[in-house]
Amino acid sequence: GNSVTQMEGPVTLSEEAFLTINCTYTATGYPSLFWYVQYPGEGLQLLLKATKADDKGSNKGFEATYRKETTSFHLEKGSVQVSDSAVYFCALSDSGGAQKLVFGQGTRLTINP
Amino acid sequence: GAVVSQHPSRVICKSGTSVKIECRSLDFQATTMFWYRQFPKKSLMLMATSNEGSKATYEQGVEKDKFLINHASLTLSTLTVTSAHPEDSSFYICSARGGVGVGGSPLHFGNGTRLTVT
Image (cartoon, rainbow over all chains, first blue to last red; front, side, top):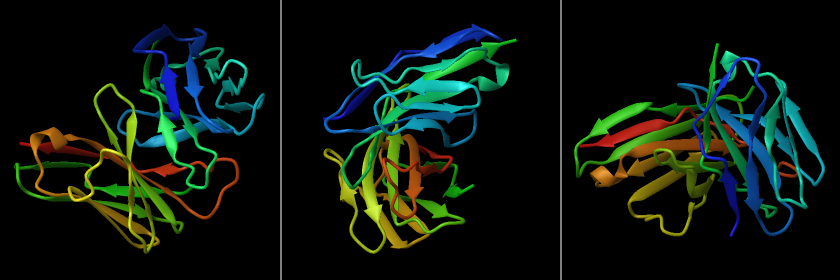
């Protein structure tokens, strides 16, 4: 079945550091890929997405590229801020009609000033 | 943007009682709603998919008689945990999708409900 594997956290960085959170997936067909973010005390919010191979999703300085050859969708940001502290989830949706989301285990990110 | 309201945010109940969690789409009609369960330090696990006016589709291993889902209208789905036990303590999250999307429509998530069964 479909699955998503994220790098384990927690991840702690200093402000303005470069961020990479690895995500790899296993899927049949042609899934869409997502990164969701959960800020403290809030629900999940879509951060970015990519729907086909080589697509790059970007938002709020974050980027991720859909790499079919390596089945990866790593999240990157060049200079993180304290406000980026949150839990980040990589997810895929199947290519069938149900479009259910399969999530990775989440990575807790803490940015220190 | 689209908002999904989930209520209550926290609930503590005694073992053997039932608890109902509501999920409402506030500014759109949700043809499909999903219920997830999040274990500590683990990913969200899809429990069931509910479509308005029809029976929910449960994922393998989820007891449909224990986790009753009702999606009676286009803006409301409920999850009832029946005869709750301490092992049902978890974080439950709903999400809603309206209309038909292309290439994987993003979902709108509620803020979750922390259930503690004593």
